[in-house]
Image (cartoon, rainbow, N blue to C red; front, side, top):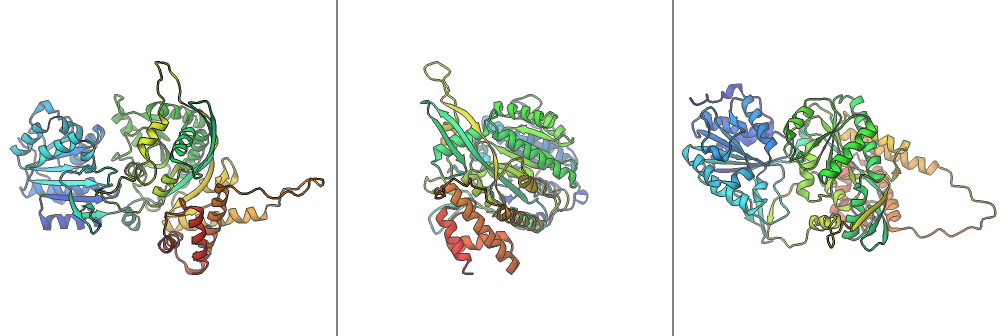
Length: 574
């Protein structure tokens, strides 16, 4: 016997954006509908309401949900069951047909790609709504894209969901509509869009504070040469990749110092109202993940939960962590997308992945709000490309086809090559050896603006930022960061100069490095922005955005010396 249809009157109340999108969907009644909504906005609830409407009025008889991971299958099935839509997360391709006990099944993109004909038959047997969760994954490989298209092109309705509708490649996403612009490039077109900035305005998502850590790094190349560089200073992409890898090495000092700071921030959040706040470390690989977990245990005295995609019981550990008050979770990529752990409030971005897509997915794990005023904090390496992504959290991107092959920022393939340990002539010869790395807080990024100047870890100056209250509105965050910065600059001015020995002749000051000049200019620009804020009442982020509009260039966290000088000159004339 078929399960009963869901009762619409018993469905939970929808948020404003969900109601608007639902009205638009029901008005148009198109076969395909793409809903883009920031992580944490409630895409699952919206999709299940669509499914309930279509099941209730007889438009469809069955529902198929396709997700990126096995864990998300269970998450969708639980969410569906809570509103009367029974979805089978255990369906296998060999089953051929869904059980009559369910309204439908939850699959993975890989599962569909392996046997699209099975799912094509299922779709044609009953009028079916197909919900394609994080639809950009259908472009991950040709087999996945072809499989999704072949399996579901006969579906009565297709609802595509994503929080990140862009990709770094030109693989077209099945069932997504592309429109050619005046520049000749084709861009994805969403039918409903609800971005991070919309969610912030409505209090649906948390504001994210980024703490960027730089530091001195040293490593040995395959030729035996020892190199040193300061993370965050202008370098070639290859040197950035090597310095970045050195910083993330678990045996160095950078990661223990950053993890210690992150745990202090977690403690501050727990003491300021978010009593069950949890932390997540996103690692590059499984070996690093296990090493970071050991560091966390040494620092906190409490074991961290380690989740690896090929471990039996990984989904269970995620669910157990979500329902517990344990402090730290360490994972590679399994929880970078879709996984719902609302209490995650502190993140450590300890991975080499640098694409806008992955970054947005990862940061999306920390923005799910539960009560007004909750904030999230993410610790990340002071790498120019990451700083830019952090500064542009509110930017809305589309998937673009036909753009020139000129990736903005770091090339993940280059990073992978630079960070790989290879075998040469059958011998385990390390082509790279991290020697040392130290960490210091370089800057704080919030709402597109940069605050603060570099301070050493473990100092009272760092503690001022780590101890920010956890329950704040976005405006309060900006005000507090501006005050911390003003106090920091004032303290530096009050600090007496170091005494010189009487007999030591005066020496001309050595020329400043590019990194030192950028720090001084950033400090000067931030001070001028703060002064204009006090005169006009405009938020710091809006002032920085106006300077970018007038002068061009990236956010101040990425800006070159020349760009900072131009903005300083411009703001002095406003």
